[in-house]
Amino acid sequence: MDITIALPAECISNIISLTTPRDACRLSVVSPVFKSAADSDYVWENFLLSDYKQIISNSVSDSSLITSLSKKDLYFHLCRNPIIINNGTMSFALEPESGKKCYMVGTKGLSIAWGDEPNHWILTSLPESRFLEVAELKYVWWFDVKAMIETGILSLRTNYAAYLVFKFVESKYGFARRPVDSGVYIEGSDNGVRRRLLLDPSRNMARLSEDRRDGWIEIEMGEFFNENGDDGKLVCSLFEFDSFVTKRGLIIQGIEVRRKSG
Picture (cartoon, rainbow, N blue to C red):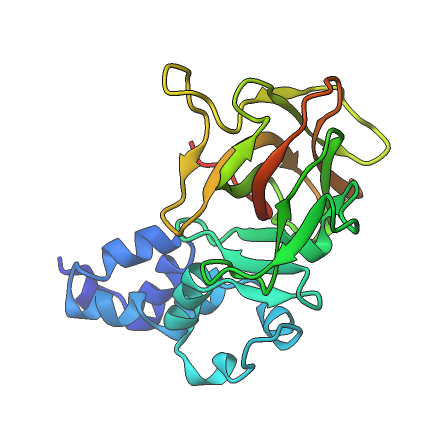
């Protein structure tokens, strides 16, 4: 029996809304009836966050996005076009396969040791950055960068990873042989887990960083499971101050927290 005849379109939409965005896209090619149900606003409203209207309204993006796009188009717009929130300090996007929340803390939202000293760090603009300004390292010994984000705004029951999003200028120095330490933990209850990351390894060394294909590189700093969103502030820390080797030439766009796949 043809299920599209046996079941009303509303029932098919309801069933599809209990799956995932990826499943809905696959089901949309089964038949015209399934496409109509899978592309419906009812299905994609369920995939969007309960607070998506508030997030968009509080961003610098055009709030007409809420009414001008279908729910499916809005979903994928938020996947492909991060919106700037919190007075330019953060960006927000959706992770395409799952619809989980993804945030990046930009330069204005980071805590950077000596960040307000132009001899050590400067703010500059790059066309490939989603933020108006990025931080360029001119010269430091003491390297210390932190992002803090409330676990309450993250998706629940989700395993997150934090990533440094960066690149180098040509005159870089100090990151090829000296690793930096990273830690991801809840404020006030540091678990002591650290990773040692070479941001600029030589050609004969293992490379942990990956090209994001948006003009930037990323490297994973650590991970965190957000159970109920009531743990407080998540700290994503990157530091190196055990040596007297100067460092320069690093450009930071931000620290991104998103669902860890796999």
